[in-house]
Image (cartoon, rainbow, N blue to C red; front, top):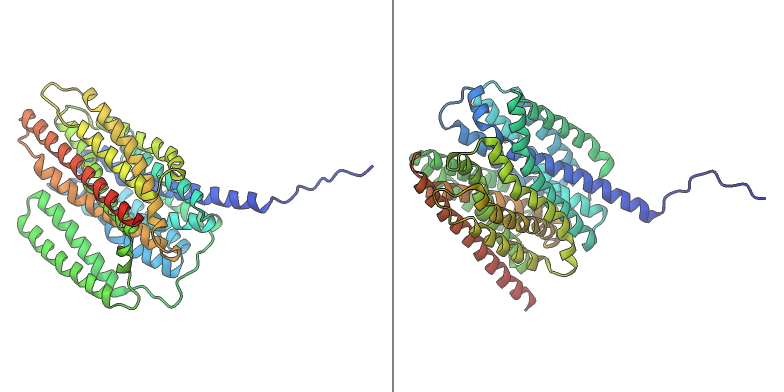
Length: 467
């Protein structure tokens, strides 16, 4: 009788590849979730932070806007650096920078220190967001794996945005407003250490170096543009105009430098691809549409609907929570739809949901907003998954991080422009509830219309690609 083999057999290659893909996807999803948790957290306790730091008037706007500014100005540079020097290296560096920024926020004694910490958090998060999907694609790069990873990436965005304000709001009740930033610092450090075991290092583009002049011009141009938008919302017309003029000059110089550079950060030949251009249009429409309105919605619910900050965060969770669930389920659309078609459907349905949010009158309750929030939330999840899918599918494999970085840069810049426009158009005297509701109705129609317009442009580009 033969003796039984007591040795555990080695896993089949397919099993090992599957485990590698799951580990890479889990770490990418965790890093995206952590970044969005930090991004949305101040919505739940901005008033407390402002008071605790004895912040001067106008500082609240910078507390809310600083991380998105750090993200927007760093994403493309992070993507270019990752493709040219290794994505895992930039991912881990981004995690450490994110952790350091969180420590600065947790130990802040002044509003200036807190804003600096948020800017550093944004720069670190840019390294995580620009590289995560490309690192997962390097482990399992087939179309099915890309759609699954894009779905979970989109879900991580929705879940992080949903839980960020709730976490800070709940801890605020216990006078622990610094605690979320210590938690985020720990998460960043864990991500940085774990990256070595979850991701293989990717090949670099041979013979290419980071375009330092292009990076400096692009970063300064976007930074000046975003500062101009924030100053404009604060009422500083002269500094806003000065910064806007500087932004135009810097971004024009950046475009010229990219045409003349031997190793450009952005290869303008990509814009001749209809599917790539459609993804950029969709990201911009998402920023100026649903992200802009939802960023303003929390303030509107508190000032015009009489909610507490925690109640407003829970209400907004209907939108972001629905987006997280639908993003996970949307990978099934990949087998039936092209990525560009999924973008168009997501934008069109998002526009319909935003239009449902209009029509508020004096005496309207929160229940009037629920259908629009749910429709917009489900559609946003489909849209986020499609954006993640197309960010890597519409560029060469060795430029995946640049594709993700550029896609998200246009989304965050579009959101900054959209939030500014929404805040200006919806402004009304503090005690005039009717005027505040009218302003909300106007911007809901505007952002819904912009989403529908984006869907029409994406659809036209889809037809052009087919031809």
